[in-house]
Length: 346
Image 1 (cartoon, helix red, strand yellow):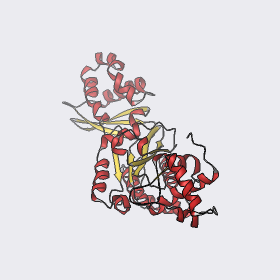
Image 2: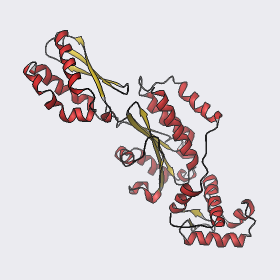
Image 3: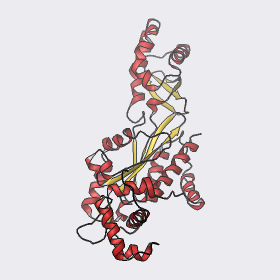
Image 4: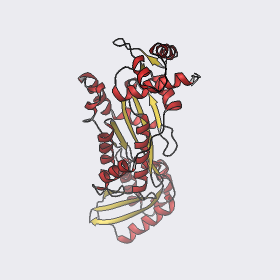
């Protein structure tokens, strides 16, 4: 931020932002004069608000003499004026209880991702998004092969984070247990410690010498391994919650606006793009406001995102909603949720 505001200007801007977030109506100088602890006349407040408008921190809607924050005003508030908000013990207990009622465990069920998006949507009344961990970045531990029938083998892939993925390998004739054990020993020795991305890119070269021993078996494995790298299995699956709760926001009483954000929620490529562009450190919360968003569809919204980790594998959580959102609370909720999933995965 280039602007250097006086203490008076900071107080007025802070009051306008926080009260516009609270009541969703433009804030007039009389309201600031009466409620803010500034001991200034309405005329003086009006002059300060005009100065803030000249700096493009406030704007005057055509339908009102009151002011609302601009994207730049929200950014100044978030970076310079916003008080940090911590969830109280009762709120934390309430959230934990919602998760624990489902008896969820991240290593046993994908339900945790769905429930996380649903619960965040209920609590925030915003569009909440959770992506599965990006398994392609996970570190491979070992393969195991289990005979299911004369023509089927279960391939079990263990990732160091503790996540286990499986795929069924179809075969023409039964393969002995000893051959499967030899194959798993060979693969585990060659591939241990690599990321799944590295394995996918170099699997043919890394197992080429085994083709001379069991050409049909190793080729069958290579042909089947792609099943472990589908969109769902590699962590790009997206869970969206809160679509039914958005209607409580004044911005979405208008059916056109409501349809717009629902269409946005259904644009999976856009959602993936949001997280791919997030360059945050572990558990850091990033806020992108209105015009700061690259995609035109997001220019009327704010996006708040953070990450979580399952072992050494990272996933993302976030909310999308009106620029008029309680940023301090969103930071606290996402930080708590990220920490909760991290602990759930241990």
